[in-house]
Image 1 (cartoon, rainbow, N blue to C red):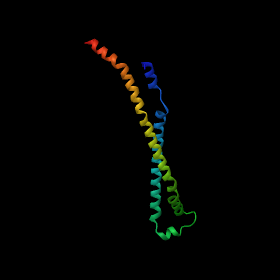
Image 2: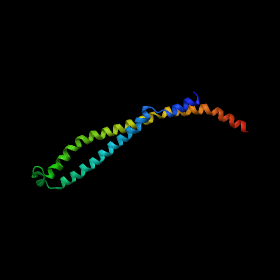
Image 3: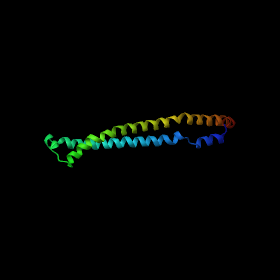
Length: 127
C-alpha cells in the first residue's frame, strides 16, 4: 500500500462512520424527550392526586380533572416503548461508532509501516 492509497482510504468514510453519530444523537434526543414527557406526567399526576377522591369522582365531562386523568392513564402507554426505542437507537449508534475503530487503527498502522523506515533512515543520516 503506497501513500496515495492510504491518503484516499483515510479520506473515504463508510456507512458506519456516518450513521453511528447520527443514530446516537437521535437515540439521545428520544431518551431526553421521553424524560421530559415523563416529568410532565408526574406533575399532572401530582395535581390530580392532590384533590380529594370526592372531587375526582364527581368531575363533570370535559373538565380539567378528567383531562388530567386521561393524560395520566394514556401517555405512559406510548412513552415506555418510545423510551426503549430511543435507548436501543442510542446503543446501535454507539456500536457503529465503536465498530469503526479497528479499521482506523489498521489505516494508522499502514501509514506508520510506510513512513517508519524513512524516519529511521533520516535520523540515522543526521547523526
